[in-house]
Image (cartoon, helix red, strand yellow):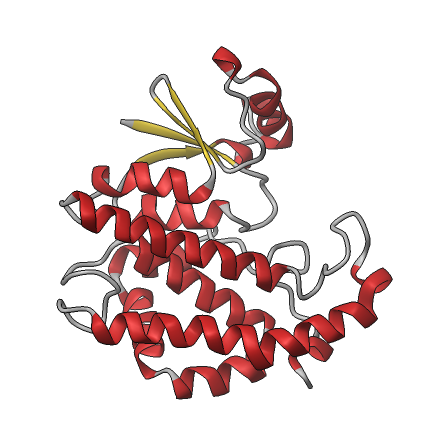
Length: 243
C-alpha cells in the first residue's frame, strides 16, 4: 500500500503523529502537502482534498490519509487504521481498543496544550489574549499537566509487558504519539518539563528510547522533520512557562 498524507506543509501539527508511525513502520507514503505546487502538492492540494472528497464523506480538517480508495481523517482514527498494518498495534481487539483509548487521551492533552496560548479564540493572535493565556497556562502547569503525565506514568508502571512501552512488550503507535507529545511539551514548556520528567522517570525513559530507534533517529535528523515553531500546536512563549 502506498499512502498519501494530506496536511499543511509548514508545521508538524497533528500530521506529525501520522508521519512518525509511517516512518517507524516503514510505510511507503507521499506527504502531498510538502510537494511543490508544480507537482500537484502544497496547500492547494490539501484544500482541494477538503473540498472535493468523494462520496459525500468530506473530512472536517487535516490530517487526511488516502489508502487506496479509502479516505480517513482524524489523527486517532487514522492511527487506529494504520497500527495493525504497520505492525504498531496489539494483535487482539481488546489491545487495539485500549491503544485507541490511550490515543484519544493524548488527543485531549494536545488540545489543552494548544489552548494555553489560544484560550479565547483560534482566530485571535496570541497577543490579543495574552492575559487569559497567562492564567490558562498557570493552571495547565500546576494541575492539568501533572494529571495527564501522572496518568501515563501509571500506565507505564502497570503494563505487564514492561514499563518502556504503554502496551505489551513491543512498540506501538501510542508510544510514538506519547513521544511526540513529550517533545512538543519540552519545546513549549522547557522549564516545567525539566521538573516533570525528573518526577516521571518512566516517561523520560520512553522518550529517550523512542528517540534512539534507528528509523525514528534517521527521520528526526532529516529535513522531513520540520522544527517546532510558533505556528504549530506547541509554541514557546517564555512567560507561559512561568519564567
